[in-house]
Image 1 (cartoon, helix red, strand yellow):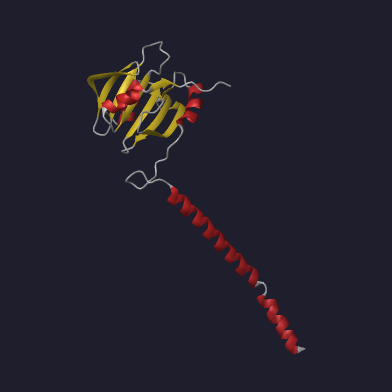
Image 2: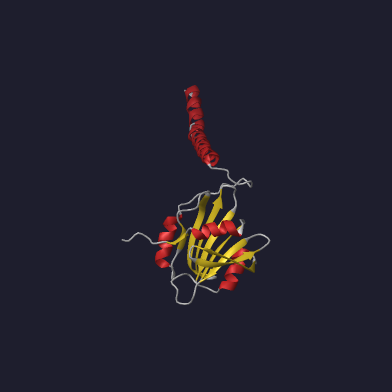
Length: 199
């Protein structure tokens, strides 16, 4: 009887530990599965810039549809995108620091950057902020039915178009980027008024 009682006592003290070990093992296995999945997703991302960070490609039309309905001006998009360019982000802010602002960021196959931006706010502060103080020149370009003033800077160049009073266009439209003014003019030539689907 005493021997059997000792066995019962051993069983009573060790049994509660087994579920705890099983729980820890299950947690470790779950974490391994999650980490393996995360690693697979990470490795599947395109590495397209020298900094090692993937730059996504987006369908800007989704955001443009919403923005075109809300913006107090005719929303412009480069459509179709000129060959070699892709959209990386798009955003409309109806109450931004510089007014109701539409911005579309682009990247070319050489990882050069460009952006289209429109606002109904004052031109000076908006252009200075967007282009990092690029300076206006006496040069102009005509593209997409608009007259553009060329701005040049240490980091960015830009084309700036200011609409005439009463025009349905945004008071200020800017194309800026690390590419030349001529490349920006190519984007300007592709600009069209975006009209969202009805209904």
